[in-house]
Every structure is written in structure tokens, then in C-alpha cells.
Length: 262
Image 1 (cartoon, rainbow, N blue to C red):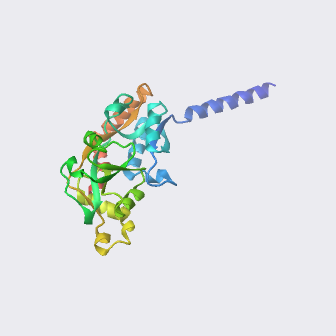
Image 2: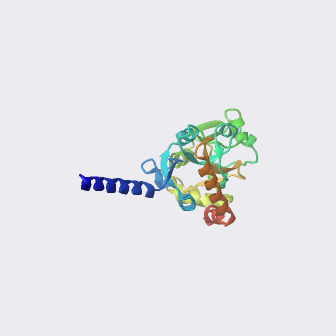
Image 3: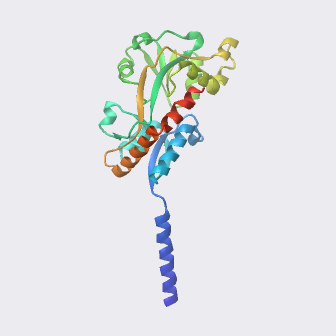
């Protein structure tokens, strides 16, 4: 009986030690985009580096959940975890607290190169059909212009179908989010990623299918976000890690320099 008792104690001690060794986890909702079969494959190299860095700095692992963007945002509002890559909007600021900035995202209008138009202001979109990701935020000017200045063509966050619609003239242009600030670098990247969609087009379009117009429509910082009161101590550690990455130049290295090399 005594031997069994010791064995039982040893078993319980081992379980407790294992539980203590188990790393703490925080739920992180990420947008499932581009790859419907394997959403995690769409996580860019800079984002993978950032998440690994934050895990190392905080000692807390992310339990990653890839879901549609609207569900990711709503899950954070409901207190189920953090959401990654959220911009600040008046409505979201009522329901979420935001981390330090990760990087700046720019919204570009992309067209077929043989159907490009001049863009200087939202008024230049009058009468056009523009592809937008449903529930994405493109800035206050765009929000006011939807259905008044231009007609929206709502898409899921699946870039292949969006660029295919553009090539088939179902839209006059699409809004594209990117950290890139050079339109030619964006055009090179789009050709590399989606140029195969233009294989049936004439040689000129195959050579240069997609053009970015003029200047960004909107620029905004992206953040981690969670409902107020959801692991506030972890948010402090997360902000420390982001500030450290910014001061050391890591954020610029991950999100700016690689992008400009396209």
C-alpha cells in the first residue's frame, strides 16, 4: 500500500512538473487568405519572423487560428484572443485596445495596364467598379465614397479571384494593401505572383499585366488588438517586444527593406 502511495505521489509530481514546463499560450486569430486549403501557408516571411521574435521575447507561445477576417476581428471583440494585423477605425476603437504599431500598410488602386486611368483623388473613381475585400477598411474617404462615387465589387480575401476578375474586366480596378511604397515594385510583385493569370492575354499584357495608379488611396498602421481586459499584462509585454524590435531596426528590416527589393 505504501509502495503504491509513493508511486502515486511520484506520478502526480511528474504531472505537475510537466504542467509547469508547458509554455503559456495566447490565442491569436489570423486572417485565412490566398490559400483556402492551407491558410497558414499565406503567412508571409516577415510575419513569421515577427511572431517567432515576440514568442521568444515574451516567453509566451501563440496558439494560431486561421479564420476569415470578419470572424478573426469578431473573435477578438468577444474576448477569445488577440487579432493580428488590425488597423484602427472609429468603430474598432470602441471595442478593442491596440498594440504598438507593427508596420504601415498602403492601399493602392491596381488596374489592368491597358485600362489604367489617372488617380489623384477619390473623385477620379466616379462611375467605376472597384474590387474591395468585404469588411476591410480602406480609410474614411473610401468609406464615404462607396455606392456614391464608385460601385463596389465585394470579394473574399482571395487574391487569385480578385486579379482574375480584373483581367476579365469585371472590375475597373481593385484596392490592394501592401507595405510597398514604390508602385513599380508593387507591379513587379504582382506580375511575379499573379502574372500566370494573364497567359491568355495579348503579349503586351502578358509582359506587364497590372499597374498601380498614381499614389496610395490610404495609409494606416497595423496592430495586434484585443478586447479591453483580455490579458492586459501580456499586452504590456507584447508592446515591449514591439518597441524593442522597432528601436533595433528589426521591424524596418522585416517589413521595409525586403519589400523594396522586389
